[in-house]
Image (cartoon, rainbow, N blue to C red; front, top):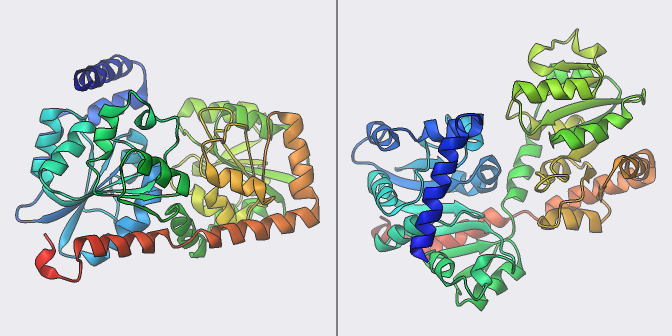
Length: 418
């Protein structure tokens, strides 16, 4: 099975190299890893203690960020090395105060993983939610470097829990401790002999709570809003935008659209969808923005603070591989609407169950959801309060994780700290 795994890695690299000829993300992925070991070696200073945090992409960074920031405070004599697998995560966070070094993660492999780990020489390693790499995990275990998984979530359909998943179960067994989001994840890990598990919940609740508590002021956005009903489309894709545009003729509504991708072709597509009644944020000022019907957010990083200006949030991705982050909107006490593909997201199911969210499947159901959850004042204020309560009830995962890590690493005993 290891040989098949290695063949799979080689095939993935081949596909990326071919795709890089016409796909910008693939091109960035490949370019970011060119001469990666030389770049890392030149960046690092000698005689440093380091802690490694790895994220698949931007969403996982936001999930692991509360723990990373807490670890940084507890280990002021250590440098934080942060890695990303995807270009969207790396490009957005390649300069960030939460880390001292930010790199692409070299592709897994016996030689590459050993070279990378020996270069950064971490005293601890943290992965968030998923991404399980055989050679990285194996070499961390061989070096006796504790590896922790934050906000893990597992489903019975995953290969780890199939009769033929023995090789992949070996990967999981290299993890020193699992911090999981729910009881079913704990039970699944227990069923394959993994007992080092603690249910801590989802660290994103801590992250979105902290974000909502901050003072966010934006004069351009405030001029755009000016007493109108604001529907904010967060991390949208084309099918989402076409549905949202069905409200374009409603004079009471204005729209903020923050697409998942901000390449020029997507921005032009959004402008066409909304009949060019749009202005891009990068081109707006306090005068020109007031007259616009649709404000397109053509940058990365603003979305999480914009939900405060919305009356209602539409979360994109539900007509594709899955919805994006609903918790950022809920933290501001906003009801949410999203497409039909949400089955892998417990928080979405819970928001629906308490009446703070509705899943839609076409334009007609979207209009009905707006009528039910937004235009009905009683339902609206009840949904807002339920969103706030839901977020409040989920807080505390980061504190639980840090407390357990301290116990496992004997934090208070300096002789046991690497």
